Image (cartoon, rainbow, N blue to C red; front, top):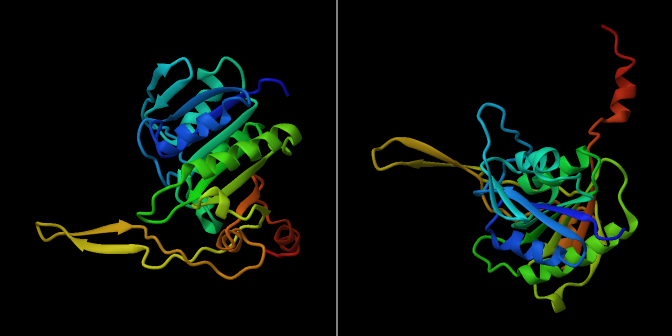
Length: 251
């Protein structure tokens, strides 16, 4: 495909270092347009804004921001902002992992999934940096470009999103690319209870636990082996074996 139109989005905001690294990596592969949130939308999942108006801000001919969620951004880009439907949607580079169960909460992954729902080959990129670790975005950008070259060449089946996680390591320390299934992320101390200066109780949701079940060929295990993990996700969430079993239920 010659000079494809590549839509870039994320959940960290259009000014983030990760989206700047991804945009630079995509240049040279095709025409690149950025449509991303105007502020951080981490863990927004697949939220769509329905109960207030959305505003679009044009910063240049190739950069737009939206005061909404990652899903809002991709939806507006496809149906309103762009003059034609993009050939590919790429999301990221997220500062932080999107492994295992994370994909259900991730705004980064959801931006890409929204592309897949619109029948556009889509890829989400995340850098597995933890806590206060300094993110090495050049390593992630290197693999984002390599993987997108292959996606442009090979294509993806309709309804499939690639979820890519890159170790936060210098290029020389990354062992290569692996194809992995989703693993099981262990969330501990998800709710933190605190007291504000007026003595009132409040809560923080979240944590930075790094543990995973030891599942061979899972994305978490591949990251622990210092490998890039690629997991194909599908938009059809039907559990077909259970569907067949339920046909025998009597009411």
